[in-house]
Length: 462
Ligand SMILES: Nc1nc2c(ncn2[C@@H]2O[C@H](COP(=O)(O)OP(=O)(O)OP(=O)(O)O)[C@@H](O)[C@H]2O)c(=O)[nH]1
Image (cartoon, rainbow, N blue to C red; front, side, top):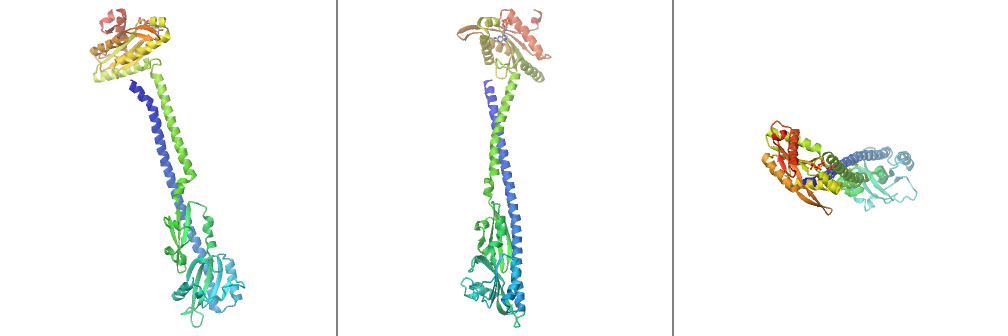
């Protein structure tokens, strides 16, 4: 009985802890699902934007490079155009293309026409082959006859730009494509401005973009926008064709930032606190339920089963015993002259006697026997698997346990009890057993108390 009580007092704690663990597991799973969702959102956001940036950059480059075709058309018509003619053609084109810093025409690789022009323009008359940094590229461009986009590099005229340099080759009549190198048409592109679309739209701090491919070398070229780290674990890469090669644009998502986002931290924190609260509430609920259940089934003074519960359980035991043809017995116990105890020592002492008597009864029976207070100073014990001989032994043991002098508040209280026993017969119900035990108990009282008497039919007639 004692072990059962301990177990039931641990039960609310167990339910609370298990509920808390389940809630925490659910929280962790939901946090992980949220992390996965955020990650896939970030990746698709990065992929979508990278695709847009590729399109924007590709379009901007194509629009800018058209200017070279326009200048080339002019040169084919007039191989030695005046600055005015050159300016009239180029000015409106550059007004619409702010990313072009400069247009240069360099017959035989010597810069002659520059727009926008300034009087002290130091580069007029400059032979491109004399520039240590560009000499190799210039010569390679003439040799390969390839239109190339060099850089981005720091420009001698200041700033950071990419140089789109187209070598022009003419036929002997000077009008058409041919074998003879004529010179260069060069566009200087303001790369920072060109990339401003990306820079300005880079508001999402988790997504980072980078571009590499200095001199059109693609994956082999240097990184000229963003961090090289982006190329370590990119979620998407795009190729942007440029004259003579390609640029490579990549996007990466800083996944560690997702788990550090305040929404995620709040979600986890609220989930954890919520789990503890749910666990505590579940424990309290079970405790309340246990309390109500105990109130409904236990006697408040002695904590053994109350009359209603012992009758329910007794009826179940009768059904079980009859179904499996097993023995079942019942003992009715009545403390002797209890009124006298109350009158002499007071009700409080009487209550204590009832509590101690309960302990003695429980001590005298097996753990599987059911002990209940039937009312007043009357107790009932239901004994499954106990036949007429065994119940006599148990009844005697209880009588012996209850026949003693109790010391309560320095007062000596003499205690004894009378007992009536009944053993289940074939067609009886639990009420019949109670009646029979009561008849036997009455006989025990009548014949001098402090004794146990077994029911037999002849007692009915006496
Ligand atoms: N202290 C206390 N007394 C109770 C309680 N329930 C019933 N009683 C008292 O128990 C006494 C029972 O008295 P009786 O029915 O005359 O029985 P008795 O004095 O034991 O006499 P016999 O049964 O013939 O031995 C009454 O005085 C009731 O008031 C209780 O919960 N606490």
